[in-house]
Image (cartoon, rainbow, N blue to C red; front, side, top):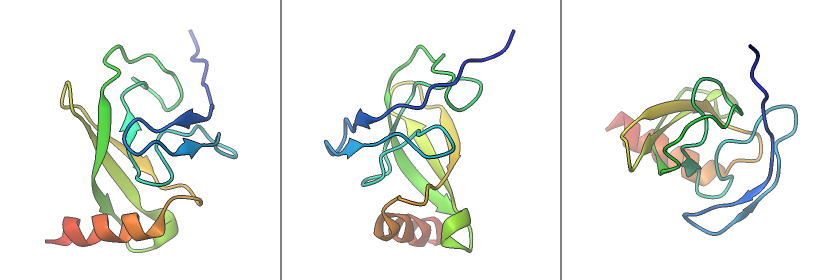
Length: 103
């Protein structure tokens, strides 16, 4: 059985930003504050998670801004998911997370 992936725009539940669909991949976090929602379970875009909790960005790892990986943690169930940054993500927030991760 294959997964059906969904790529849709949304309004961020944390900061209220209107987030457009991603180009070439599935959008999984806000481009402004980097928050996510626990909707994916096995693969990005599957929308199979039952939790639906808010997932704040807790760390960012990498040396090149376009190749950074953000970790999000669900406020309800505690699950941590790692996601690649998108080209339209807020670079200032990414840099702040990277500095926090290095402490």
